[in-house]
Image (cartoon, rainbow, N blue to C red; front, side):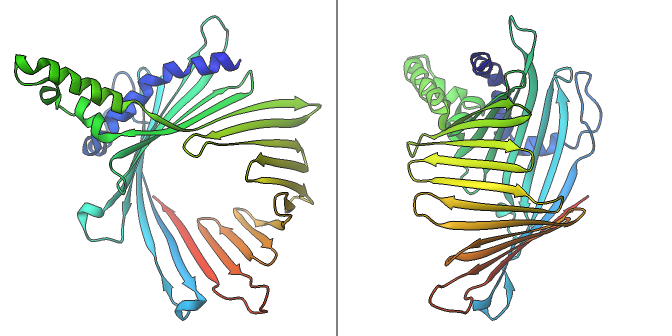
Length: 342
């Protein structure tokens, strides 16, 4: 039930603390991944994975047909099993392959801890996971995401937010002597500083959502209320899945739309969307070309035509803005992405 799932959030606190500590020791995290000997209470599940992504390659008709903006990214990741294999830890770091400045080489570091927890008084388990990410463009903020799922009740909870890395470093980064004061006469002041730092560590919740699923004579219905706290905005997504037909309704103060996806055959899906707020209509066509190959075309009349082409590790996104007063397509843009895994 929902109350059991929410109460299990308390069990995720140690996972979050582990990841917060990990993120405050960035260099230690990278070095730890190179250890190959297994630990008696867990070990690494395999050798680290390395992938190179070329993204944001930009080709526009306004720059003379030149390709620019290539932004290669190197992703290094690894995984481990901890606490008698009860906690699965995945972590990694994204590096910029374009810059020659070592200080701007790292982009973000992230980690996810997952485990299954047995509900007290109930003969079932729930799955919980916590993910944290530190973006080097905003080093003062640590983003986190908590997910909890109860398969038996068909309920999923997601909470996203952020916390301060400065306060975190003050508490667990070896500055205890500064916080507590170096002399007995400063004990009260030091204690107040510690309390203030701990208060700053308390996370700021930005987004909360719950997804509840129902089975209806072989079809599936999901209700997904969402709430964005900083913007004080709430909406709900209703989905009805009847095999070849999927109906999706988004209801919010500034967004009301209905999408009906119809599977024509194994290779083609048509999805018209009606925006109830302004009466606009868009049409998406998903076409499967083969194994790991597909093309999705979305037509927004008087606005744009978007094409996404996937071919294994390659992804190309083409945008053609449409001006209703002209028959010509101006400002055509192409973005490419390529994943290379080792």
